[in-house]
Image (cartoon, rainbow, N blue to C red; front, top):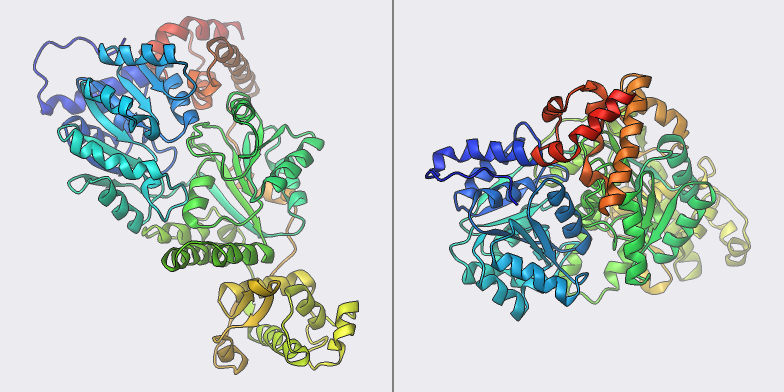
Length: 623
């Protein structure tokens, strides 16, 4: 049953903030709302519509869960993924809230029972996938319910230009027509100004109040490097900096996912592959193991992740270039949901740029969509190549002003830059001379070989050892020339002809560089420093994974984690739905001797205090 105390007296709006805080403390165990949460909760509980943009880990769920408990009826939550709704329902039940979901994992008897409980007023929150809600049966059920509010989670899925577009989300506007008196709240962690406008238009939220929080995730450190044997780089990063910690690795292809997971497993890292090619039951089993076990690394395509609520993911790694900053922000934001330090690490190379542009040019999308995709990719490349603060660049993309963060790779070790005009002129001239000499264009490897004076079989066969640009770039190695070419592609001074074996061609803008009318400042490619040195820097700046203050506290924390693991197995729920690591660390720090002393620990509400208080105190006393 709901934990709200009976209150037969009238409930004027003036009392809402106090009642909301009481629910937050009694049910969820938090002493106070974070920034904007109280205002959002009061607005929605008062019957207002809202659009909420809040970074991952910022507490979006409370913005509709608390109002649903404050208002009469059941809160209906539209959630795009089964895993998301199952985890949230499990966490709510642990907190004593009457919550259920309706999805394909239930048989008809179980679904019928959930529907009965909803009709009989026995639920506080009901989670539905949009596909289920929009069926004739789903809408008929809603017509029979007293509905407190509608919450549309992951609202960016309504954007046809977005990275997570869901066709069914376009039909959710009917909620405004069918239930005009029911407040609606749309929530997302990632949406630029254009996507926000699209959410408002497509969901008919024209009268909604917008709450846009900072997109900044200060606990995440952004690190981007050039590819140099990416799997070896990834292995070194995990072994030296995140051994034994949970993480997500994103790859572009299914083959790369499987090979990367196998490589990590061969080196003793508990890694699982995940992509849409696996049977549904296998995907679910792997996802469940990642969520419920500590220290598992999952290697996946972008088919994995939306709705993953695991709070203790310490790193997200990309070994291939994402398609857009929205996608990158969403994926990297799955690190550090608990607010503790985490890392977003990525390597990318020339082949990534070529491949992503080829995918756009060869897609069957219309011209408008291709232009949008190209602009999004250019913004993504800009983040990779910038010499400025990466966080500052990322926030500016979402319309937010910021100063340098002091906690990304560019801030901690400002990249070397140089006047790259002469180097660019050499490379551009080489592309031109090779094509002029042979009557057709060549790919990146051949151009670099000619620049460096490599007498390969192909260079000799084409007679390119006799052209004027042969050997004029011997002062730089192959990786350095590839880095320069990658930057010229980003600047659109060079294009790739995907219809003809990915050969390089000069763009019209290259004439200004060749003539000397345009000067170029480029990043200097340097050999990547060891991950061990990076780890040391991370520890010095306070970005390492938090630990307790003493060996005794750390030992108690590990005992508490083991206890939590047993409870989670017993209840068949993810461990973090029982208690977050942050709650366990606080218990280890305080070492309470009486149950009532647990009441002030964040995350321990009335239900969890009654259920687990005695066991926790006994564990503390036994140490």
